[in-house]
Length: 139
Image (cartoon, rainbow, N blue to C red; front, top):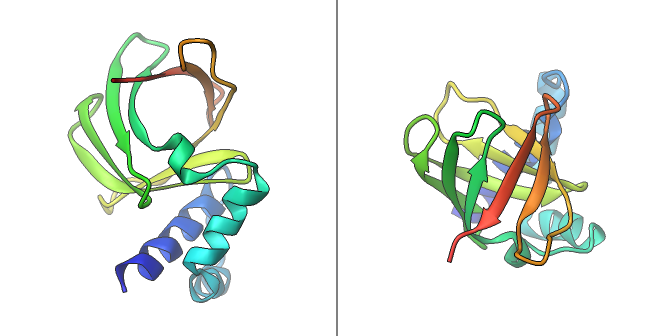
Protein backbone atom coordinates (compact mmCIF):
# COMPACT_ATOMS: atom_id res chain seq x y z
CA UNK A 1 0.00 0.00 0.00
CA UNK A 2 2.85 2.41 0.78
CA UNK A 3 4.50 1.95 -2.62
CA UNK A 4 1.53 3.13 -4.75
CA UNK A 5 1.03 6.14 -2.47
CA UNK A 6 4.74 6.97 -2.62
CA UNK A 7 4.68 6.63 -6.40
CA UNK A 8 1.70 8.96 -6.67
CA UNK A 9 3.44 11.57 -4.54
CA UNK A 10 6.59 11.30 -6.66
CA UNK A 11 4.69 11.76 -9.89
CA UNK A 12 3.03 14.85 -8.48
CA UNK A 13 6.41 16.18 -7.35
CA UNK A 14 7.99 15.55 -10.72
CA UNK A 15 5.13 17.23 -12.54
CA UNK A 16 5.59 20.37 -10.44
CA UNK A 17 9.38 20.62 -10.79
CA UNK A 18 10.21 23.75 -12.75
CA UNK A 19 6.58 24.46 -13.52
CA UNK A 20 3.69 26.28 -11.95
CA UNK A 21 1.43 24.27 -9.68
CA UNK A 22 -0.94 22.07 -11.73
CA UNK A 23 -4.71 22.42 -11.57
CA UNK A 24 -6.39 20.31 -8.91
CA UNK A 25 -7.99 18.01 -11.53
CA UNK A 26 -4.64 17.36 -13.20
CA UNK A 27 -3.06 16.51 -9.84
CA UNK A 28 -5.92 14.15 -9.02
CA UNK A 29 -5.64 12.44 -12.41
CA UNK A 30 -1.87 12.00 -12.03
CA UNK A 31 -2.30 10.50 -8.58
CA UNK A 32 -4.92 8.06 -9.85
CA UNK A 33 -2.73 7.04 -12.80
CA UNK A 34 0.44 6.49 -10.79
CA UNK A 35 1.65 2.94 -10.40
CA UNK A 36 5.08 1.50 -9.59
CA UNK A 37 5.23 0.24 -13.18
CA UNK A 38 4.54 3.66 -14.69
CA UNK A 39 7.35 5.26 -12.71
CA UNK A 40 9.78 2.45 -13.51
CA UNK A 41 8.77 2.86 -17.16
CA UNK A 42 9.85 6.52 -17.10
CA UNK A 43 13.27 5.57 -15.75
CA UNK A 44 13.63 2.84 -18.35
CA UNK A 45 12.89 5.34 -21.16
CA UNK A 46 15.66 7.54 -19.81
CA UNK A 47 18.10 4.60 -20.03
CA UNK A 48 18.87 4.49 -16.33
CA UNK A 49 17.51 2.69 -13.30
CA UNK A 50 16.79 3.88 -9.79
CA UNK A 51 19.45 1.43 -8.61
CA UNK A 52 22.13 3.28 -10.63
CA UNK A 53 21.39 6.53 -8.79
CA UNK A 54 20.82 4.93 -5.41
CA UNK A 55 23.57 5.35 -2.84
CA UNK A 56 25.16 7.86 -0.50
CA UNK A 57 26.02 11.16 -2.19
CA UNK A 58 27.75 14.33 -1.07
CA UNK A 59 26.25 17.48 -2.61
CA UNK A 60 28.60 20.49 -2.77
CA UNK A 61 26.71 23.72 -3.43
CA UNK A 62 28.09 26.88 -5.13
CA UNK A 63 28.69 28.58 -1.76
CA UNK A 64 30.82 25.63 -0.59
CA UNK A 65 28.27 24.16 1.81
CA UNK A 66 27.81 20.41 1.68
CA UNK A 67 25.00 17.98 2.33
CA UNK A 68 25.04 14.18 2.51
CA UNK A 69 21.98 12.50 1.02
CA UNK A 70 21.18 8.79 0.82
CA UNK A 71 19.07 7.86 -2.22
CA UNK A 72 17.55 4.41 -1.71
CA UNK A 73 16.47 2.04 -4.50
CA UNK A 74 12.98 1.90 -2.96
CA UNK A 75 12.45 5.57 -3.90
CA UNK A 76 13.04 7.07 -0.46
CA UNK A 77 15.80 9.48 0.51
CA UNK A 78 17.31 10.80 3.70
CA UNK A 79 19.49 13.88 4.18
CA UNK A 80 21.75 13.00 7.09
CA UNK A 81 24.15 15.93 7.24
CA UNK A 82 24.67 19.42 5.93
CA UNK A 83 22.39 22.13 4.61
CA UNK A 84 19.24 22.75 6.62
CA UNK A 85 18.19 20.03 9.00
CA UNK A 86 17.88 16.29 8.67
CA UNK A 87 15.21 15.44 6.17
CA UNK A 88 13.41 12.46 4.66
CA UNK A 89 11.27 12.07 1.61
CA UNK A 90 10.84 10.47 -1.78
CA UNK A 91 12.88 10.77 -4.96
CA UNK A 92 12.55 9.80 -8.60
CA UNK A 93 14.60 9.93 -11.78
CA UNK A 94 12.44 10.54 -14.84
CA UNK A 95 12.45 12.71 -17.94
CA UNK A 96 16.22 13.22 -17.45
CA UNK A 97 15.69 14.92 -14.07
CA UNK A 98 16.06 13.80 -10.49
CA UNK A 99 13.44 15.22 -8.14
CA UNK A 100 13.27 15.04 -4.36
CA UNK A 101 10.07 15.59 -2.40
CA UNK A 102 10.47 16.23 1.31
CA UNK A 103 7.94 14.80 3.72
CA UNK A 104 7.95 18.24 5.38
CA UNK A 105 4.72 19.88 4.33
CA UNK A 106 6.28 23.34 3.87
CA UNK A 107 8.99 22.21 1.43
CA UNK A 108 8.37 22.16 -2.30
CA UNK A 109 10.01 19.50 -4.51
CA UNK A 110 13.43 20.31 -5.87
CA UNK A 111 14.74 18.94 -9.14
CA UNK A 112 18.02 18.89 -11.00
CA UNK A 113 19.46 17.60 -14.26
CA UNK A 114 22.45 15.37 -13.65
CA UNK A 115 25.44 15.05 -15.96
CA UNK A 116 27.65 12.10 -16.80
CA UNK A 117 29.97 10.74 -14.13
CA UNK A 118 33.69 11.50 -14.30
CA UNK A 119 36.36 8.86 -13.59
CA UNK A 120 35.81 9.30 -9.83
CA UNK A 121 32.03 8.94 -10.03
CA UNK A 122 31.37 12.64 -9.38
CA UNK A 123 28.72 14.37 -11.44
CA UNK A 124 27.68 17.94 -12.13
CA UNK A 125 24.04 18.76 -11.56
CA UNK A 126 22.18 21.84 -12.75
CA UNK A 127 19.51 22.95 -10.31
CA UNK A 128 16.21 24.56 -11.33
CA UNK A 129 17.60 28.02 -10.53
CA UNK A 130 20.59 27.42 -12.83
CA UNK A 131 23.13 26.89 -10.06
CA UNK A 132 25.68 24.12 -10.51
CA UNK A 133 26.13 21.51 -7.79
CA UNK A 134 28.79 18.80 -7.61
CA UNK A 135 27.49 15.40 -6.53
CA UNK A 136 30.09 12.86 -5.41
CA UNK A 137 29.63 9.27 -4.24
CA UNK A 138 30.46 8.59 -0.58
CA UNK A 139 31.88 5.18 0.23
